Image (cartoon, rainbow, N blue to C red; front, side, top):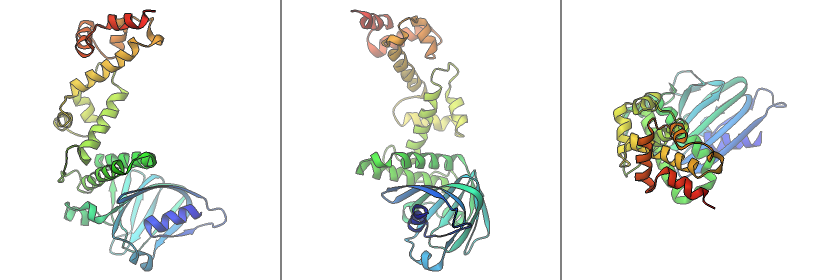
Length: 303
C-alpha cells in the first residue's frame, strides 16, 4: 500500500483506511509536470479521508477525479453527498475536508491536480462546479484524453515541451469546467484548438482510406460543428480535404515503394488509399511528388 498512500498524501491530501488491511492492494503511476500532477490508481475497497489538518496543508489546488471503473461516494464540507461513477468526473477543491467511500472490490480512478490560479477566467462556472459530479461531456473527454497522453509520455518530454503541454492541459480544463464556453487563449496553437485538432487528426488516421470520409462525419463523431472543425484546420493554413488528400498520398507513396505491395496495380493502390478516381489520383500524386506513380514504382524496381 505505500505507493498508494504516498500518492494520496501528496496529490489528494488523504488518509487511506482499508476495509481489510491484510488483503488491501493498490498500484499507482504518477506523472509530475509544471503546475500539474497526474495519477492513475487502482486499489481495493477502502475509505479515504481528508482531515481538517490535511486540508490546511493544501496549496489551493483543484483535483479532478475520473473513475475508469466502479466509482465512489464522496461528501465534502459545504457540499452534498455525491456519487461519482464511470462516465462522470468529480471536481474537488483540495483545501476542503471530506470523506469518500470506495465499496467495489477494485476501483480504478484517474486524477489530475491543477493549481486554482491556472484556471482563472471562467468566473461563476468554477464555483458552481466545485464539490459536484459532472457527466463526461465531449469537453471532459478531450481533457482526460490529453491528460492520459501526458501521463504516458511525460518522462520523455523536455522542459519546454512539458511547460507547453501543461499550458494546453490548463486550457482544456478551463474549457471543460466552463461547459464548452469559449475562454480566452493566448498564442497560436494553444490548448483547446490544438487538442481538438490533434483528436480529429487521430480519428482521420484510423479511417483515412474510407472513400466516405467527410468533414461533417468527423465533426459529428466528436460532437462539434462542421464549421468549428473547418476553422480548426484553417488555423493550420489548410483544409480538411487537403489534409486528408495529403495523408492518402503519403500512404500511397509508401505502398508504391514497398516491396510488399509491388505485385498490386497502381489503380488498386489508389482505390485502397481512398481515391475513387484513378486520373484524379495520378494528377494529385504528380503535383505532390513531381513524378507519376508509375515513375516512382519504376525507380524503386530498377536494379
